[in-house]
Length: 404
Image (cartoon, rainbow, N blue to C red):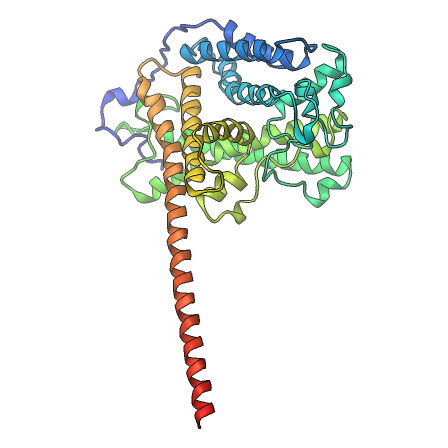
């Protein structure tokens, strides 16, 4: 028998009234569509003086417009892809900023993004010879825009997982492996979705259970007076996004590799191995998807350098950790403002929890670093004292033997 769906407030008839009235959209979809379109255009365009400045300004202006008033539709299916657009435009902007210097690695001349980014299996600076807005240039640009981790590129992000031995062994084996993973992720996501409906969207009115969806979502919570149900809700809440993303990613990789649009090397696993995670830092740095790692590291690196914080120091590490999660907190909270919700859900209810969640990650990592530093210092001190004690004892024994 399912538990109460809501326990954050006393039982009331209002808990069991569907809140299906949405606030009208207040923004046009044009800034969002234009922002998405501007990204490949910026990279596929011919080279011309001021190109980096022009497109960076356009992208920033459109991005700010989308952030100021993000609610442009009450259709969740339409809003959801655009809620993820922030990671894509930020990545493209990072590629443009990286191209602003006239010289690159090795002192070679930089003509634009074409001089810095290419496939590992292709000639370096391959895009320099491509015709602006030509087919090959469009394909090169689209790959950079949407391949946020730089998989199989010369700018691949750190800690991107490797393909399994089976997936490395030919296109057919890769397709079979990803087909099996797609089915597995779909089944687990479907099971988890059913648990969501039963645990969160069904309420006990006292005279029987309500129909699914007849619970006011304003009061949804994982809290429950019974710890078993509280644990069940918590366990059911988190896996759905993970397996949904996994299903979409594995299905897309299977189809595009089967059609020979991409190679298996272009589709490394989305996530790492949870069995190798021992700290919160490891979870985000080695297990999670790494889609925003490069762009965050680049922009936050600029801040560290401007503030003259020495790289490799504790201050540098902590500054980067807190700024990374502060940015992540802002953009993840902002995406909740793009997706439609019932009109009785307040602004702070849509943003505060998400914002604080990411700041808590930074706090946890800082706490871990402090604990590890204390442990290492203590161990080194004890080890040093023990070594000194043994050395003194050995010296005394040697002197005793010499005198006897």
